[in-house]
Length: 350
Ligand SMILES: Nc1nc2c(c(=O)[nH]1)N[C@H]1C(S)=C(S)[C@@H](COP(=O)(O)OP(=O)(O)OC[C@H]3O[C@@H](n4cnc5c(N)ncnc54)[C@H](O)[C@@H]3O)O[C@H]1N2
Ligand code: MOO
Image (tube, rainbow, N blue to C red; front, side, top):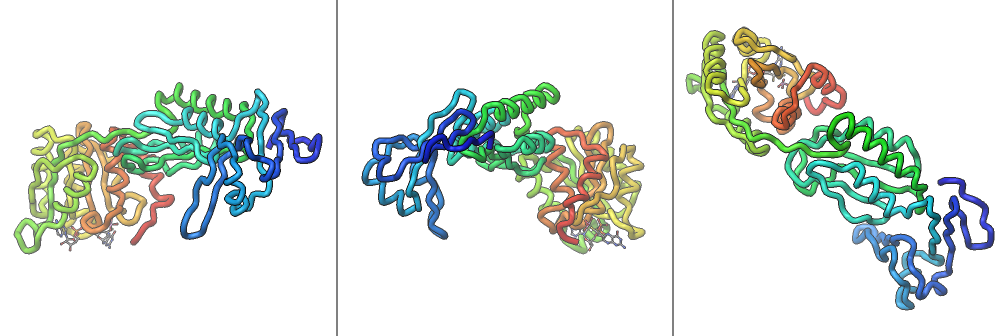
Protein backbone atom coordinates (compact mmCIF):
# COMPACT_ATOMS: atom_id res chain seq x y z
CA UNK A 1 0.00 0.00 0.00
CA UNK A 2 1.18 3.57 -0.54
CA UNK A 3 1.91 5.78 2.45
CA UNK A 4 -1.05 4.66 4.51
CA UNK A 5 -1.36 7.33 7.16
CA UNK A 6 -2.54 7.25 10.74
CA UNK A 7 -6.26 7.63 11.17
CA UNK A 8 -7.07 11.32 11.57
CA UNK A 9 -10.13 10.22 13.48
CA UNK A 10 -11.49 6.88 14.55
CA UNK A 11 -12.88 4.72 11.75
CA UNK A 12 -11.20 6.64 8.98
CA UNK A 13 -8.08 5.57 7.05
CA UNK A 14 -6.16 7.88 4.74
CA UNK A 15 -4.49 6.17 1.76
CA UNK A 16 -2.43 8.73 -0.19
CA UNK A 17 -5.09 11.37 -0.01
CA UNK A 18 -8.02 9.02 -0.54
CA UNK A 19 -10.23 8.39 2.43
CA UNK A 20 -11.77 5.07 3.35
CA UNK A 21 -14.43 5.63 5.96
CA UNK A 22 -15.64 2.76 8.11
CA UNK A 23 -19.34 2.69 8.77
CA UNK A 24 -21.20 0.25 11.01
CA UNK A 25 -23.41 -2.07 8.96
CA UNK A 26 -26.53 -0.90 10.83
CA UNK A 27 -25.71 2.71 9.93
CA UNK A 28 -24.93 2.00 6.27
CA UNK A 29 -28.50 2.01 4.92
CA UNK A 30 -28.60 4.39 1.94
CA UNK A 31 -24.83 4.37 1.51
CA UNK A 32 -22.95 3.15 -1.55
CA UNK A 33 -20.62 0.11 -1.24
CA UNK A 34 -16.97 0.87 -2.04
CA UNK A 35 -16.14 -2.62 -3.35
CA UNK A 36 -17.65 -5.99 -4.23
CA UNK A 37 -18.39 -8.21 -1.24
CA UNK A 38 -17.67 -11.92 -1.57
CA UNK A 39 -19.52 -14.83 -0.03
CA UNK A 40 -17.91 -18.26 0.32
CA UNK A 41 -19.94 -21.31 1.30
CA UNK A 42 -17.41 -24.17 0.97
CA UNK A 43 -18.43 -26.69 -1.65
CA UNK A 44 -21.49 -24.65 -2.67
CA UNK A 45 -20.76 -21.07 -3.63
CA UNK A 46 -18.01 -18.52 -4.04
CA UNK A 47 -18.89 -15.26 -5.61
CA UNK A 48 -20.08 -11.73 -5.37
CA UNK A 49 -22.93 -11.23 -2.90
CA UNK A 50 -23.03 -7.45 -3.32
CA UNK A 51 -21.63 -5.43 -6.17
CA UNK A 52 -19.55 -2.29 -5.79
CA UNK A 53 -21.90 0.68 -6.04
CA UNK A 54 -24.83 -1.19 -4.48
CA UNK A 55 -26.95 1.02 -2.24
CA UNK A 56 -27.41 -0.71 1.10
CA UNK A 57 -31.04 -1.35 2.16
CA UNK A 58 -32.21 -2.56 5.56
CA UNK A 59 -32.88 -6.12 4.22
CA UNK A 60 -29.16 -6.38 3.43
CA UNK A 61 -28.10 -6.06 7.04
CA UNK A 62 -28.65 -9.73 8.07
CA UNK A 63 -27.00 -10.94 4.84
CA UNK A 64 -24.00 -8.73 5.51
CA UNK A 65 -23.77 -10.05 9.06
CA UNK A 66 -23.97 -13.63 7.70
CA UNK A 67 -20.78 -13.05 5.72
CA UNK A 68 -19.09 -11.58 8.76
CA UNK A 69 -19.43 -7.87 8.06
CA UNK A 70 -19.85 -5.61 11.08
CA UNK A 71 -18.40 -2.57 9.28
CA UNK A 72 -18.34 -1.42 5.66
CA UNK A 73 -16.09 0.91 3.69
CA UNK A 74 -17.23 4.09 2.07
CA UNK A 75 -14.65 5.70 -0.19
CA UNK A 76 -13.70 9.26 -0.96
CA UNK A 77 -11.19 8.70 -3.76
CA UNK A 78 -8.30 11.14 -4.39
CA UNK A 79 -7.59 12.27 -7.96
CA UNK A 80 -4.27 10.40 -7.91
CA UNK A 81 -5.80 7.03 -6.93
CA UNK A 82 -7.91 4.39 -8.64
CA UNK A 83 -10.48 2.01 -7.25
CA UNK A 84 -9.44 -1.68 -7.54
CA UNK A 85 -11.94 -2.40 -10.35
CA UNK A 86 -10.83 0.52 -12.49
CA UNK A 87 -7.15 -0.33 -11.94
CA UNK A 88 -7.71 -3.98 -12.94
CA UNK A 89 -9.73 -2.95 -16.01
CA UNK A 90 -7.16 -0.42 -17.24
CA UNK A 91 -4.41 -3.03 -16.90
CA UNK A 92 -6.41 -5.58 -18.89
CA UNK A 93 -7.11 -3.04 -21.65
CA UNK A 94 -3.38 -2.19 -21.79
CA UNK A 95 -2.25 -5.81 -21.98
CA UNK A 96 -4.76 -7.54 -24.26
CA UNK A 97 -4.49 -7.54 -28.03
CA UNK A 98 -5.27 -9.59 -31.10
CA UNK A 99 -8.09 -12.10 -30.65
CA UNK A 100 -8.59 -11.42 -26.96
CA UNK A 101 -11.52 -10.04 -25.00
CA UNK A 102 -11.72 -8.90 -21.42
CA UNK A 103 -14.52 -9.42 -18.97
CA UNK A 104 -16.18 -7.16 -16.46
CA UNK A 105 -14.28 -6.18 -13.32
CA UNK A 106 -15.12 -8.57 -10.54
CA UNK A 107 -13.81 -8.19 -7.00
CA UNK A 108 -10.85 -6.18 -8.26
CA UNK A 109 -10.02 -8.68 -11.00
CA UNK A 110 -10.37 -8.65 -14.79
CA UNK A 111 -9.87 -11.75 -16.96
CA UNK A 112 -8.42 -11.65 -20.47
CA UNK A 113 -9.79 -14.49 -22.59
CA UNK A 114 -9.20 -15.93 -26.02
CA UNK A 115 -11.79 -15.32 -28.73
CA UNK A 116 -10.43 -18.02 -31.07
CA UNK A 117 -8.66 -21.36 -31.27
CA UNK A 118 -5.00 -20.51 -31.64
CA UNK A 119 -1.58 -20.13 -30.07
CA UNK A 120 -1.45 -18.10 -26.86
CA UNK A 121 1.37 -15.56 -26.96
CA UNK A 122 2.20 -14.35 -23.47
CA UNK A 123 5.30 -12.18 -22.99
CA UNK A 124 6.90 -13.58 -19.87
CA UNK A 125 9.23 -10.58 -19.47
CA UNK A 126 6.19 -8.28 -19.35
CA UNK A 127 4.39 -10.47 -16.80
CA UNK A 128 7.51 -10.47 -14.58
CA UNK A 129 8.10 -6.72 -14.92
CA UNK A 130 4.52 -5.94 -13.94
CA UNK A 131 4.64 -8.26 -10.96
CA UNK A 132 7.79 -6.49 -9.76
CA UNK A 133 5.81 -3.23 -9.41
CA UNK A 134 3.91 -4.32 -6.30
CA UNK A 135 0.29 -3.55 -5.30
CA UNK A 136 -0.97 -5.03 -8.56
CA UNK A 137 -0.75 -8.58 -9.85
CA UNK A 138 -0.89 -10.28 -13.22
CA UNK A 139 -1.34 -14.07 -13.47
CA UNK A 140 -1.12 -15.73 -16.86
CA UNK A 141 -0.96 -19.13 -18.51
CA UNK A 142 2.40 -20.17 -19.99
CA UNK A 143 3.50 -19.02 -23.43
CA UNK A 144 2.62 -20.97 -26.60
CA UNK A 145 -0.28 -23.01 -25.25
CA UNK A 146 -3.12 -24.00 -27.54
CA UNK A 147 -6.27 -22.16 -26.46
CA UNK A 148 -9.91 -22.22 -27.52
CA UNK A 149 -12.65 -19.56 -27.44
CA UNK A 150 -13.35 -18.52 -23.86
CA UNK A 151 -10.14 -19.96 -22.40
CA UNK A 152 -8.42 -17.71 -19.89
CA UNK A 153 -5.09 -16.17 -20.90
CA UNK A 154 -4.38 -13.84 -18.00
CA UNK A 155 -6.06 -12.01 -15.15
CA UNK A 156 -5.16 -8.65 -13.67
CA UNK A 157 -5.73 -7.89 -10.04
CA UNK A 158 -5.40 -4.89 -7.76
CA UNK A 159 -4.13 -5.99 -4.36
CA UNK A 160 -5.34 -3.14 -2.11
CA UNK A 161 -8.74 -1.56 -2.60
CA UNK A 162 -7.15 1.70 -3.70
CA UNK A 163 -4.19 1.75 -6.07
CA UNK A 164 -2.10 4.79 -7.04
CA UNK A 165 -2.81 5.63 -10.67
CA UNK A 166 0.96 5.80 -11.24
CA UNK A 167 1.16 2.00 -10.89
CA UNK A 168 -1.39 1.53 -13.63
CA UNK A 169 0.41 4.08 -15.79
CA UNK A 170 3.56 1.97 -15.33
CA UNK A 171 1.67 -1.06 -16.65
CA UNK A 172 0.41 0.99 -19.62
CA UNK A 173 3.97 2.15 -20.37
CA UNK A 174 5.42 -1.39 -20.14
CA UNK A 175 2.69 -2.76 -22.43
CA UNK A 176 3.11 0.16 -24.85
CA UNK A 177 6.91 -0.33 -25.04
CA UNK A 178 6.41 -4.01 -25.80
CA UNK A 179 3.90 -3.22 -28.53
CA UNK A 180 6.28 -0.70 -30.14
CA UNK A 181 9.15 -3.19 -30.07
CA UNK A 182 7.33 -6.31 -31.27
CA UNK A 183 4.25 -5.00 -33.04
CA UNK A 184 1.92 -7.16 -30.93
CA UNK A 185 0.35 -6.99 -27.49
CA UNK A 186 1.89 -8.76 -24.48
CA UNK A 187 -1.20 -10.99 -24.26
CA UNK A 188 -2.57 -12.11 -27.61
CA UNK A 189 -3.61 -15.18 -29.60
CA UNK A 190 -2.42 -16.06 -33.09
CA UNK A 191 -4.74 -18.09 -35.34
CA UNK A 192 -3.62 -21.33 -36.95
CA UNK A 193 -3.15 -21.57 -40.69
CA UNK A 194 -5.04 -24.40 -42.31
CA UNK A 195 -2.30 -26.54 -43.87
CA UNK A 196 -2.29 -29.41 -46.34
CA UNK A 197 0.17 -32.04 -45.25
CA UNK A 198 2.04 -34.89 -46.89
CA UNK A 199 2.35 -37.90 -44.54
CA UNK A 200 5.01 -40.52 -45.28
CA UNK A 201 4.71 -43.64 -43.14
CA UNK A 202 7.83 -45.78 -42.99
CA UNK A 203 8.14 -49.31 -41.65
CA UNK A 204 8.44 -52.54 -43.62
CA UNK A 205 6.02 -54.23 -41.19
CA UNK A 206 3.31 -51.66 -42.05
CA UNK A 207 4.16 -51.47 -45.77
CA UNK A 208 3.88 -55.25 -46.14
CA UNK A 209 0.57 -55.32 -44.28
CA UNK A 210 1.91 -57.42 -41.35
CA UNK A 211 0.47 -54.79 -38.99
CA UNK A 212 -2.19 -52.09 -39.33
CA UNK A 213 -1.07 -48.46 -39.54
CA UNK A 214 -1.65 -46.60 -36.29
CA UNK A 215 0.32 -43.45 -37.13
CA UNK A 216 -2.12 -42.24 -39.80
CA UNK A 217 -5.21 -41.99 -37.54
CA UNK A 218 -3.23 -40.49 -34.63
CA UNK A 219 -1.58 -37.81 -36.76
CA UNK A 220 -4.81 -36.99 -38.60
CA UNK A 221 -6.60 -36.48 -35.28
CA UNK A 222 -3.89 -34.13 -33.98
CA UNK A 223 -3.89 -32.10 -37.21
CA UNK A 224 -7.66 -31.91 -37.56
CA UNK A 225 -8.03 -30.69 -33.98
CA UNK A 226 -6.04 -27.61 -35.04
CA UNK A 227 -7.75 -27.09 -38.40
CA UNK A 228 -5.28 -28.76 -40.80
CA UNK A 229 -5.46 -32.00 -42.77
CA UNK A 230 -3.46 -34.82 -44.27
CA UNK A 231 -3.76 -34.27 -48.01
CA UNK A 232 -1.98 -37.50 -48.93
CA UNK A 233 -0.48 -40.45 -47.08
CA UNK A 234 2.12 -42.80 -48.62
CA UNK A 235 3.61 -45.99 -47.21
CA UNK A 236 7.22 -47.04 -47.74
CA UNK A 237 9.49 -49.82 -46.45
CA UNK A 238 12.60 -49.04 -44.37
CA UNK A 239 14.62 -48.12 -47.42
CA UNK A 240 16.50 -44.85 -47.40
CA UNK A 241 16.41 -44.28 -51.15
CA UNK A 242 12.63 -44.80 -51.34
CA UNK A 243 12.03 -42.48 -48.38
CA UNK A 244 14.14 -39.71 -50.01
CA UNK A 245 12.26 -40.15 -53.31
CA UNK A 246 8.84 -39.79 -51.64
CA UNK A 247 9.92 -36.78 -49.57
CA UNK A 248 10.83 -35.10 -52.88
CA UNK A 249 7.50 -36.20 -54.36
CA UNK A 250 5.66 -34.45 -51.46
CA UNK A 251 7.78 -31.34 -51.98
CA UNK A 252 6.77 -31.24 -55.66
CA UNK A 253 3.09 -31.51 -54.69
CA UNK A 254 3.50 -28.18 -52.88
CA UNK A 255 2.26 -29.40 -49.48
CA UNK A 256 2.66 -26.95 -46.62
CA UNK A 257 4.33 -29.47 -44.31
CA UNK A 258 5.85 -32.94 -44.57
CA UNK A 259 5.65 -35.56 -41.83
CA UNK A 260 7.68 -38.77 -41.90
CA UNK A 261 6.72 -41.37 -39.29
CA UNK A 262 8.67 -44.20 -37.66
CA UNK A 263 12.25 -45.37 -37.98
CA UNK A 264 13.52 -42.49 -35.84
CA UNK A 265 15.51 -44.44 -33.31
CA UNK A 266 18.72 -46.48 -33.11
CA UNK A 267 17.97 -49.78 -34.89
CA UNK A 268 19.69 -50.64 -38.17
CA UNK A 269 16.25 -50.42 -39.83
CA UNK A 270 15.75 -46.84 -38.58
CA UNK A 271 16.43 -45.00 -41.84
CA UNK A 272 14.29 -41.88 -41.41
CA UNK A 273 16.76 -39.29 -39.97
CA UNK A 274 19.37 -40.17 -42.61
CA UNK A 275 16.79 -39.99 -45.41
CA UNK A 276 15.45 -36.59 -44.24
CA UNK A 277 19.03 -35.26 -44.20
CA UNK A 278 19.82 -36.77 -47.62
CA UNK A 279 16.70 -35.15 -49.08
CA UNK A 280 18.43 -31.80 -48.46
CA UNK A 281 16.78 -30.71 -45.21
CA UNK A 282 18.31 -28.00 -43.05
CA UNK A 283 17.97 -29.85 -39.78
CA UNK A 284 17.14 -27.57 -36.84
CA UNK A 285 17.38 -30.46 -34.41
CA UNK A 286 17.43 -34.24 -34.36
CA UNK A 287 16.63 -35.04 -30.76
CA UNK A 288 14.28 -32.96 -28.65
CA UNK A 289 14.70 -32.54 -24.88
CA UNK A 290 11.19 -33.64 -24.02
CA UNK A 291 9.78 -36.98 -22.94
CA UNK A 292 7.80 -38.32 -24.67
CA UNK A 293 9.09 -37.32 -28.08
CA UNK A 294 12.84 -37.22 -27.56
CA UNK A 295 13.63 -38.86 -30.93
CA UNK A 296 11.76 -36.18 -32.91
CA UNK A 297 13.52 -34.43 -35.79
CA UNK A 298 12.58 -30.98 -37.06
CA UNK A 299 13.93 -29.04 -40.03
CA UNK A 300 13.11 -27.10 -43.18
CA UNK A 301 13.35 -28.49 -46.69
CA UNK A 302 13.43 -25.55 -49.13
CA UNK A 303 11.43 -23.62 -46.55
CA UNK A 304 8.84 -26.37 -45.98
CA UNK A 305 8.69 -27.56 -42.37
CA UNK A 306 9.48 -31.26 -42.09
CA UNK A 307 9.18 -33.52 -39.04
CA UNK A 308 10.51 -36.99 -38.33
CA UNK A 309 7.99 -38.41 -35.85
CA UNK A 310 8.99 -41.10 -33.35
CA UNK A 311 6.83 -43.98 -32.15
CA UNK A 312 5.33 -42.26 -29.11
CA UNK A 313 3.35 -39.80 -31.28
CA UNK A 314 1.14 -42.78 -32.19
CA UNK A 315 -0.05 -43.35 -28.64
CA UNK A 316 0.82 -40.37 -26.43
CA UNK A 317 -1.60 -37.45 -26.27
CA UNK A 318 1.13 -34.88 -25.49
CA UNK A 319 4.58 -35.16 -27.04
CA UNK A 320 7.23 -32.83 -28.47
CA UNK A 321 5.18 -32.92 -31.70
CA UNK A 322 2.21 -31.43 -29.83
CA UNK A 323 4.44 -28.57 -28.65
CA UNK A 324 6.03 -27.78 -32.02
CA UNK A 325 3.07 -28.40 -34.36
CA UNK A 326 1.02 -25.43 -33.04
CA UNK A 327 4.06 -23.16 -33.38
CA UNK A 328 4.44 -24.12 -37.03
CA UNK A 329 0.70 -23.78 -37.71
CA UNK A 330 0.75 -20.30 -36.16
CA UNK A 331 3.47 -19.31 -38.63
CA UNK A 332 6.48 -19.33 -36.30
CA UNK A 333 9.91 -20.20 -37.66
CA UNK A 334 11.22 -22.73 -35.16
CA UNK A 335 14.89 -22.25 -34.28
CA UNK A 336 17.35 -24.32 -32.25
CA UNK A 337 16.81 -22.19 -29.13
CA UNK A 338 13.08 -23.08 -29.18
CA UNK A 339 14.05 -26.75 -29.05
CA UNK A 340 16.65 -26.12 -26.32
CA UNK A 341 14.00 -24.43 -24.18
CA UNK A 342 11.69 -27.45 -24.27
CA UNK A 343 13.76 -29.45 -21.78
CA UNK A 344 12.91 -27.36 -18.73
CA UNK A 345 9.43 -28.55 -17.80
CA UNK A 346 9.57 -31.09 -20.62
CA UNK A 347 9.44 -34.26 -18.56
CA UNK A 348 5.94 -35.68 -18.83
CA UNK A 349 6.41 -39.39 -19.15
CA UNK A 350 9.15 -41.74 -20.24
N1 LIG B 1 18.36 -48.22 -27.34
C1 LIG B 1 17.45 -47.30 -27.59
N2 LIG B 1 16.20 -47.69 -27.78
C2 LIG B 1 15.23 -46.80 -28.02
C3 LIG B 1 15.53 -45.42 -28.07
C4 LIG B 1 16.87 -45.02 -27.92
O1 LIG B 1 17.20 -43.85 -28.00
N3 LIG B 1 17.79 -46.01 -27.67
N4 LIG B 1 14.50 -44.53 -28.28
C5 LIG B 1 13.18 -44.97 -27.91
C6 LIG B 1 12.16 -44.05 -28.39
S1 LIG B 1 12.10 -42.56 -27.56
C7 LIG B 1 11.22 -44.41 -29.31
S2 LIG B 1 9.94 -43.34 -29.64
C8 LIG B 1 11.21 -45.75 -29.87
C9 LIG B 1 10.80 -45.97 -31.31
O2 LIG B 1 11.08 -45.00 -32.16
P1 LIG B 1 10.97 -45.19 -33.73
O3 LIG B 1 10.42 -43.96 -34.30
O4 LIG B 1 12.31 -45.63 -34.26
O5 LIG B 1 9.89 -46.34 -33.96
P2 LIG B 1 10.03 -47.71 -34.77
O6 LIG B 1 11.25 -48.44 -34.35
O7 LIG B 1 9.89 -47.44 -36.22
O8 LIG B 1 8.75 -48.47 -34.28
C10 LIG B 1 8.52 -48.72 -32.92
C11 LIG B 1 7.28 -49.62 -32.77
O9 LIG B 1 6.16 -49.00 -33.33
C12 LIG B 1 5.60 -49.76 -34.40
N5 LIG B 1 5.17 -48.88 -35.48
C13 LIG B 1 5.95 -48.03 -36.19
N6 LIG B 1 5.21 -47.42 -37.13
C14 LIG B 1 3.97 -47.88 -37.00
C15 LIG B 1 2.76 -47.62 -37.68
N7 LIG B 1 2.67 -46.74 -38.71
N8 LIG B 1 1.64 -48.28 -37.27
C16 LIG B 1 1.68 -49.17 -36.26
N9 LIG B 1 2.79 -49.43 -35.57
C17 LIG B 1 3.93 -48.83 -35.96
C18 LIG B 1 6.70 -50.67 -34.82
O10 LIG B 1 6.21 -51.82 -35.45
C19 LIG B 1 7.42 -50.93 -33.50
O11 LIG B 1 6.72 -51.92 -32.77
O12 LIG B 1 12.48 -46.33 -29.71
C20 LIG B 1 12.85 -46.38 -28.36
N10 LIG B 1 13.96 -47.23 -28.18
O1 MOO C 1 10.99 -40.09 -28.82
MO1 MOO C 1 10.17 -41.37 -27.96
O2 MOO C 1 9.05 -40.93 -29.06
O3 MOO C 1 10.09 -40.31 -26.57
O4 MOO C 1 9.00 -42.28 -26.98
